[in-house]
Structure formats: structure tokens, C-alpha cells
Length: 382
Image (cartoon, rainbow, N blue to C red; front, side):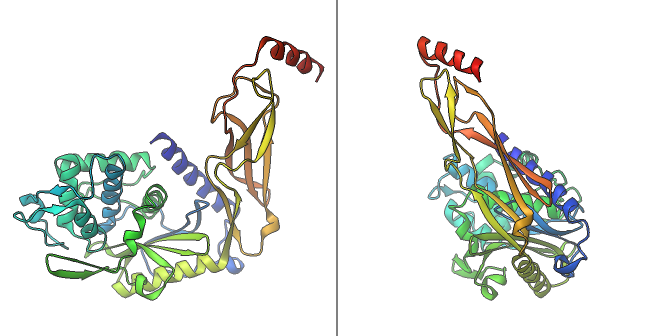
């Protein structure tokens, strides 16, 4: 949980720096298109950089976008093996009577966790969401406590949940920025379950229901994520598209129709892919340098980054994006796996956008007495 929070906070800080580098979005091809929505947020998944935003911290009703958190905690339970896909869930009266969009589960008909997950993701079933919440935490109220705790861990500072479904409540709110953080975390933390969001239809209890994300039919590069709608929230969509190695996430909130949320989201995605480019600077756990070690049982240690490092910048501006790699010298044993031994600063136009720790890939214990003595002399002569 701690490392995930650090990554998320880094994204928040990086977003602020990115806006400082490009304070005027009305210049040249960096002008974001007009989007007919109350709020939006466009994010590059790999570099975790914000590309455009409107009212990113405005508190809004998230409607069924709430179910991304319900799914996130479900995937977490599956990963921790406190829940299994084939596990049978008894449907409570509370789940069965959930108003709004439904999967049509029944109290006298046991349903599996896998079926409920499909019902939440594809059919946006409120009944399925409550059933999963009860299966994981015993009650929806207890599950909501976990939702809010996880939101805090992810850095969602303008979010508060009161239910697992997204049904309207004055104390149930989020923001475009927070929902982008949640979507980014879901894609990053649970890639094995993410393909479920690209399914166009699901049949349960003899009733086939289509995925409400129309972009799945319109754009072959779109493979998620979630729609939401209530009279007060308007029509909302968090969409995700992958073109080549790049993935963009677009959060569009408060449009006036199903068609509008689709076309406005498509507009943002197209603009982001056309206006910016990304490149990977370093691959996770790939050796970056080999450093000399003093007073150790080994003479060298390999160093790398514990995550892929990408940078995003306006198309054609490669020369303005730079990186500076520094290492800590001298390296003296003992060295632990993961110990920080250097740093990478990624910059654009001379402004540092992000920093990344360079870490030891292997441990180096203290060497014998002769090695320690000889290296002490070597260090004095340096």
C-alpha cells in the first residue's frame, strides 16, 4: 500500500510540474479541444503525465464510475485469495432489491464471484456490486469503509464513498482527477483482469445486456473502461485506448447525453495521441550500470529501476526532453537489494519533471578482513 501511494503522489506532483512547463494551452498545437463536459482529465498511463484537464478537482457525483473502486477491491481480494472466482455467493435481500441498473440476480439462485464481476463490469449491475461488497466485507457498510481507506491510499483527496454502486447521495462524491488516479491504478495493478472491460456483452439469467461504452464499437483501440449516469451526474465515461505501446485514459464527466460522452471522449483521446508522443527511457529491472563496490564480498553491483520509466512530450520535441543519471560514489559494503545507489531526473526544457531512484539488483555482503583493509587504503588514495 505504501509504495502504491508513493507512485500516486508522484503522479500528482508531476501533474503540477507539467502544467508549469506548459502554462498556456492556447499556444500552437497544444490547445486542447473544446469538450462539452463539466470536467475532464486526460492522462498518459505509462508516464503518469497529465495532458489536459478542465475542473480536475471539482467535486462531482461519480454515478456508476464508483464501480471501478468496487472492482478494484474485488480484484485485490482475488489476488489475496480471500475470494475465488468459482466461489458461490448467496444473494441477500439487500442486494436483490438494489434500485437502478441490474444484473437480475435472485435470492434463491446462487451466483459465482466470476458471474458477479461480469455483472458489475459489463452490465453495471447495482445488485451485483452489493453482492460482491457483502461477500468481501460482510456488509455494504463495512465494504464502503474499505473503499474510502483505499481511496486515501491512492491519493484521492476529493473523494468520499457511501455505497458500492454510485447511487446518488450528498456525501458520495469524487473528481475527474481522483477518478483518473483510480483508473490508472486499476490498469496498473490488475492487468490480468483488465481485459474484462473490453467485453461488449454479457448474458445472465437468460438476459443479455450490452456494455454501455459505445467506444468499444467505434474505436478498435479502445478497450475500457466504465460508463456512469444519473439525472444529477449527467452522462459520464472513463475511456481507455492503447495505440502501439501508449495507453491514454480519458475521464469525461457531466455531458448531456450518451452520444455526447462518447464523442467528447473520442475527441480527447484522438487529440492526446496526435499531439503528444512518449518514449521509454529505461525498462524495469534492466541493468543500467555496474558500480564498483568497496570492502565487499563482490567487487561490483548492478543497478536498475524498479519500474519502467517513460516520458511524454509534444510530438516532434524529442531534443527538449532530457534525462540526467547520477550515482552515489563510493559504494561501500554492505549493500542491500533495493538500496538506493543513484537517481534519474527527467526534464523538459530544463525543468525537472520527475525523479526516480536507481537501486541495487543484488546484495553485497561485507568482505573478509584483507579486502576491507586493502579497500580502506584504496579509498584514502582516491
